Length: 235
Length: 232
Figure 1: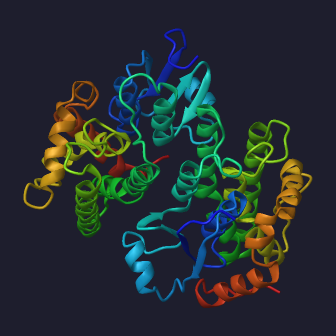
Figure 2 (figure 1 turned 90 degrees about the horizontal axis):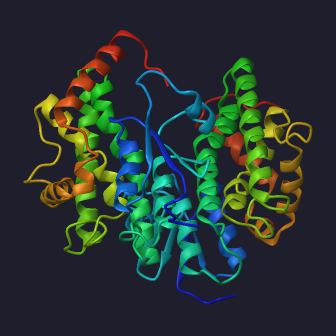
Figure 3 (figure 1 turned 180 degrees about the vertical axis):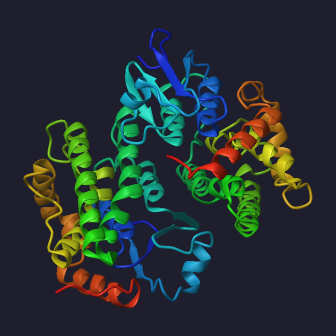
């Protein structure tokens, strides 16, 4: 049953969404064949509303007609179902797994809001605050990487793991913000381990195929910023 | 009780702590419980959870595990096969359980605390309606997850049972203070039945504070921290 080429896998998503990127990277690492159904920016399809009625958000993984929502939940699901395909995303040891999960929660709780906070900030002051929080989060993640990777290239060790996917899916947007704001989020001086990690992560074939070009994200960010300024944010 | 080098930093009224205690109880794992003053944080808490400085923290030998849902998964994986399972057996059921736990975390606490913090009758009514909507969703979740059995976890108390169950005394306290029925047998009959079953279990009896205690605590928070008048 699990991992059979006959099971139908669809992913509802959008090219620019880092949450969707998590799911896509996981599917690619596990060599799962799937149909990517692109949602149009600003609208929600019937299928999305039906598959995720509570949050109406992407990504949604639909496996044999069963929807699974929330990016980190999807990544764990992929790891558990396609267990014999590709390397394990979650580490084997229960404590290492707890560390991966803890820092993934931290990323969603503290890092991501501050990253996008810089874009949405209504004042220079608010923007500076978000920037501080983003840099502080990355400093903690740098320390965590030192402990968790144990000298290897990824949080997952020799291969890309759950926490690599959780953070790495945002590298495209991080580069976009660096370009737009003229400062480095990942800095050789302050976060050397994460700098090396980001390069290794993006150099991976299946990741490279998913993370959008910085220029395209910058363009999209400018469009979104204009929208935020002209109307209160929806969703 | 299985012996192991376990300590839990907690606070008696915190649902996040209570759910961890419930699961440790269900699994028959013994531990040293160390009550924390969350408004006056101890060296121990700062040392074992430097990132968030919050309870619960499970200290297992030289390992610190933080965040209640992460702790529950750790308990499941580290003591798999001892006592009942925490998470369900299949990947899909696990994904559903994790989804609803995240939903509960996202919505429920804010909603009933919102009732207690409401400055006007209007806002209070809004928050009560919101809580009903959330509990109605969870009624549906229970129907799906329990598949006709007594608990979200099926035959035994599991991840989703303790995640929601840890809020039950808070919900009762909010009902008393606001005068509104939140877990309403006409709107969510399955959950009301589940609540009775759950509260009869040892893990609930041993870890949930009394409604009197929590009502007093909540009223105190209303006055001292949330600056709203405590209703009669």
